[in-house]
Image (tube, rainbow, N blue to C red; front, side, top):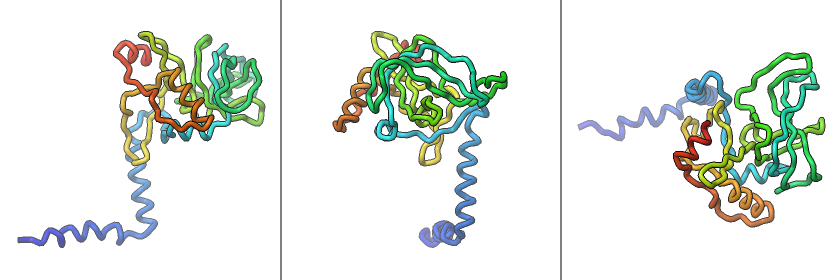
Length: 219
């Protein structure tokens, strides 16, 4: 009978036989294959954990979107005016701030679409993870990962990201969906507040949405 260990030897020694350039090329091919599975109009992101998102964001707040501001600069960006309701981390005076998102219309009327860039609705509450910009506005930390929208349905309030134009690339290079759970808004806010103040408790805010809540999320 054949020696199965000896049959496997060529396969096991193949990677060791490849030089560093060949191994790098093989890795690039694997990533390219994964990205090819993404929709043509989507931005690919590597997810950041809630722990890291909180720890790396200079400013975290709950606010209400007042609306989109007129284009005033030569770069294609969109400015949103947000009223601050509660600061969870960092320092910001009471009142409002401007959140600048990549993509949009320039003052001259030119338009650039950035797929996955957060969009908001006037009057809606949001949970934002922010970083300061040199021009005095605020950027959303980690692109779309730092923008949560409050969704109300079935007596619960959920904190949901809009990932409709985003493809999530897992660290093992496989593209796949999440576990179906979402964040309960008030529980998530309380957990963030605890973490900022040194309490590193478990994430008890994750819930599985009902069919009605799932419809509200996707509408």
